[in-house]
Amino acid sequence: MSIEIRNVSKRFGDFHALRDVSLDVSSGELIALLGPSGCGKTTLLRIIAGLETADAGSILFSGEDTTDVHVRERQVGFVFQHYALFRHMTVFENVAFGLRVKPRGQRPSEAQIKAKVHELLKLVQLDWLADRYPSQLSGGQRQRIALARALAVEPKVLLLDEPFGALDAKVRKELRRWLRRLHDELHVTSIFVTHDQEEALEVADRVVLMNGGKVEQVGSPQDVWDHPASPFVYGFLGDVNLFHGRAHEGEVHVEGIRIDSPEHRHLRDGKALAYVRPHDLDVAPYRQGASGIVATLARAIVVGPIARLELEPVETNPDNPGSGTIIEAQLPAQQFRDLGLREGDTVVATPRKARVFVEDWVSP
Image (cartoon, rainbow, N blue to C red; front, side):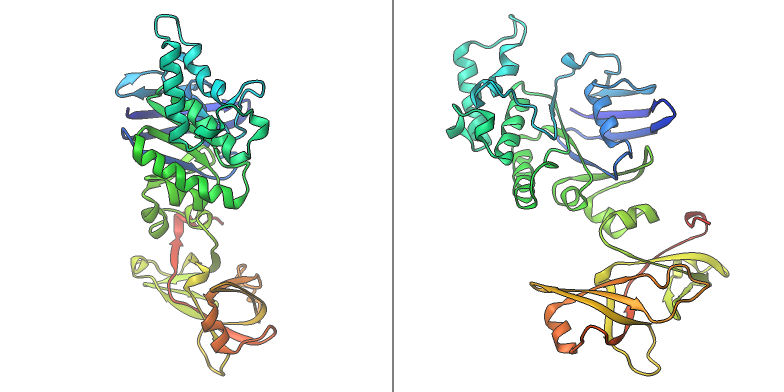
């Protein structure tokens, strides 16, 4: 089932949760709504489900307007962050619940319910837990049971609100891989909300970046990572260093270095922001006359194959409010060892790659 979201707005008192949001979701697609707390992603999910009503705009399922259709009739499966399992029911009874409360004319027989529940429990790889109670399960197992329960009614759309948010990092990683495999098998149109960038980029077909009740960018995980549409998107997707400078005729001058920016060749002495990811910084021992950002190696954290460096710029430029802050760099651990650097050493950092935003994107 495809979903069309058209010009949806929602306010809670003076707070604008959503501002004229439009989005298309193709049938069988897995979409991530990604953004910080308060950006509107959960509100949008609840409006799609019918749990909230939009102040303006419409929701269409496969071309049919469902804006005023009751939540029970939308054929939507909803998975909450905190499982929402019935504690007094066994795993089997939890999954069977949605089938048992169907109207008499649509309700399967007990034999059909039993077969369906066992099929779903096998699908989520927990058929051996059918007689257990939620209190006897781990967090990851509870969430898989919650997903099986949502799938039991054969929803046309599956909505997941921070489905792994209450779980520890290792379990989250396992479950998001599992969710991707499950989706590839079932092809149910799915939308999940997350504030975890890695989760969205790893699981989704497309990522919808939201900020302040608006959609900032929509694209494949690779597209939004490689071509962020705004400073917000660049800053939200992973660690990033921000430098303030001036753009002039295709070059950005920042921290005493020049960064090629041919897309801004028509700009003359304009205010610019240069975003550099930690792995796009070269770091070397300082040599007299070296070109780059001169800094002190304040801290080096070597864990596994990566060395994470915290650099403190040596000089603070009063014309550059970005200087004087910590700069983060990442190097292969072996390369860092080969450089022979120690905490307290003076180094020079040089961006290999930067994304530059100017004029309209730069806040005063």
